[in-house]
Length: 149
Image 1 (cartoon, helix red, strand yellow):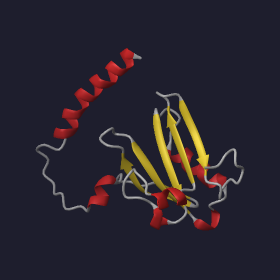
Image 2 (cartoon, rainbow, N blue to C red):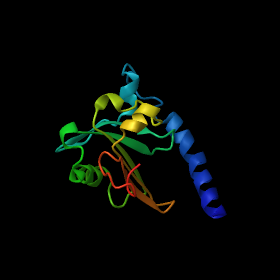
Image 3 (cartoon, helix red, strand yellow):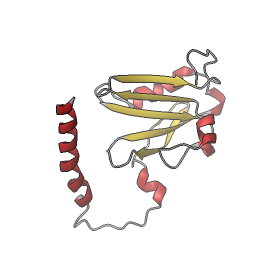
Image 4 (cartoon, rainbow, N blue to C red):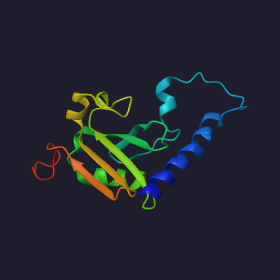
């Protein structure tokens, strides 16, 4: 555990200077709105879903995909599976997706308000380093109390 922590800290020490100076000397303008700088340049979509934004968690390089599910099909779990399969590759060490059926509740940042959390339809998280893979549903999607939040 100590070796893993040391390796992670060493990685951060080496990665931070690169990220700080990555744009040095580039000739471009920064007139984009703040929301656009948080989003990945190419946002994925599929039948019944689309990524509204991808927000970086701090400066980790890890993103939370904020996905809108068509409200008319938000109880169809195959829509969620399609989005998960498209957004999270099998070899990724980390992937996090949050799903809503109403765009107005999708947050601009990684943290959620109480209302945004109440309107969350599902959340998928894979963190291979922590040995975690979890798909949780709201009770409006899966009314089984043992599976829903």
